[in-house]
Amino acid sequence: MSSAARIHWRSFKWAAWLGWEMDSNWTEPWLFMVYSVIKPIAGAFILVLMYTVFALIGQFRDPDLFSYIYVGNAFFIFVGNTLFGTFQVIQSDREWYQTLRYTYISPISYYTYIVGRAASKVAVAALAVVITLAFGALALGVRFEINLAQLPIFAAAFVLGLFCLVSIGICLAGISFMTAKHTHGLAEGIPGIFYVFCGVLFPLTALPEWAQSVGRGIPLTYWFDLTRRLLLPPNTISTGLGFFNDYEILALLLASSLIFFLMSIGIFKLGEFLARRAGKIDMTTSY
Amino acid sequence: MSTATATSRIPHRVKLNLQAIVGRAYPRVIGANREPSWIFFEAILPLLGIAAYVFIYKALATRALGVILTPTPSAPYGMCGPNPCVDAAQQALFQANSIANTNALIATVVLGGAMVAFWLNVLWSMASQLYWEKEIGNLQLYMMAPMSRMALLGGMAIGGMFMTSVRAITTLVVGILVFTVTLQLGNPLLLLGVFFVTLIALYGMGMMLASLYLLWGREAFNLSALLEEPIFFSSGFYFPVGGFARFGTVGGAMLAFATAIPATLGLDAMRQIIVPGSPSLPIPIPWSQGAYLTPDLEFGLLLVLAVMFLFLARYTLAYLEKLARREGRLTSRHQ
Image (cartoon, rainbow over all chains, first blue to last red; front, side, top):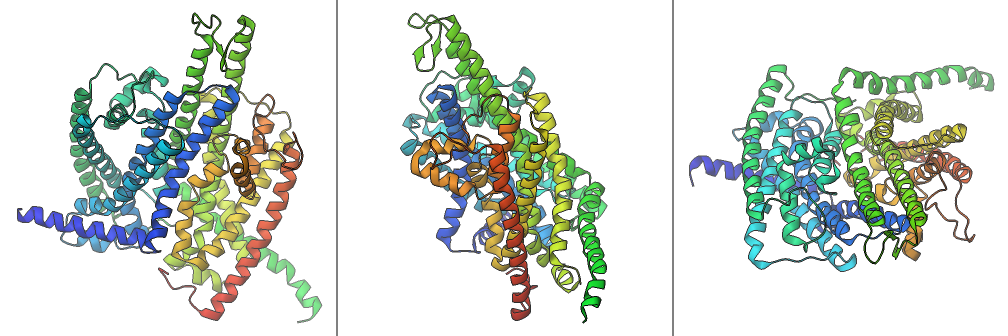
């Protein structure tokens, strides 16, 4: 390992440890685990009740669409946690702990530090996703059909999906350098973009044509589609991406993830530069 | 101090507390306007999450209508529920019902989306605020100031309501226009009454939680994060909460818990008032077969909740103040 790589690894490792401690040391580990999975599971329950209420009122059952919604929502836990885990670092360190100025001037890559801080949230999200999927299979009758031969594609798609999410999170962190205390608006709103345009909870074909085009430009659309193809049995839902095979979807995911990675570097550097020039690196906006 | 002197000081105290309310509301209203980026982050972006929920109902409706309208050899008039439609008239009836139900559910989402703004504001800008003030060093100044702490929290609440109303109104207007939701305004007075009493009860709850969060420290602060999705779920922000009643004892227990949160009753009452048609899945009254909570009844219950939460807020504040004096650790940061 080169010395630069070693420095990055060390920054990542300690930032991940710090993130874990900051997230979890306020309580016992078991309580923290419960706390970490209740939110996403409640989110899944909202969808379960929405579907149930529709089925009750309209006397209509659609197990294919329910499975589509459920699995999409389960994997969306990664989106919320990873994005929030990255961009909130700027605002929590700057406004809450007021330590950003010290970390920022230390001889580390701040980009790597943020990625490290997000790592604990990604790990907790993974646990919540597993629990949500298991609950769906055991209690709600969601049918999974996994072909072992396709596991390498699933693993590759999974890694690329997370890579892409971290890149988008870093883009937002770059923007956060310049904005006031809007963590909650960002946390709620940015995942909302992906919620709507990436076919997470409903097929892309439910959107107007222009919105489908937006969705096809976001890498997460391909990640969700491929993940569902690999986990669920064939169904009657028209996703609007049926003309791509699995490998083509993976290639699209790879290409768009690389584009977002390069964008993350550019936007982060720009945000940093503008914040330094405007003297906003350590501002507080606590109204 | 003589009675006359104490009485003569009332106007001064009222003025002082009114000034405190205005003083604490001011930074929320003016400060927010000095940082206009919040409109994008707090009012525009959250619309997308609401849109996602609307599209779920739309996707379900499209599939349901497809089943109703698609003839098959075994069901020449499509399917009406689990059975084939008997004739074209029944098919048309099911189609009309499906469209009306979808409108009602989308209206529920739009209304819930507007009220989410207030709930988040209560959690993050009321309940967590005193803890936040402690962390940034303002709390000791508040505790030393001569006004009532209730006035301080009241100012926070009024400022928060103003900021949040912008988001709520944006959600409502955009929701109605973009998703072409049909609403009715049969009883505007009751609607306004329910809305404002719900807000008073919600913010009263926030004032109470503000003191409790301060006492519980970091653990309580994490409670705010925990009270988002689980409350959106239990209070029926995106579906008629009466749906829980179909889940037996567990559902009944969930409903009982949910009705202690003002948003649940407020949302259900407003939904019943403004969504056309008979209420779908209202909250049943367990001891009376076939009866359900009407908006008038929910208004009365909300009044009780509002008074109760304001009383509890005052009590917990007094307790907090006593504890602060006794233990002297109220302003210690990061505890």
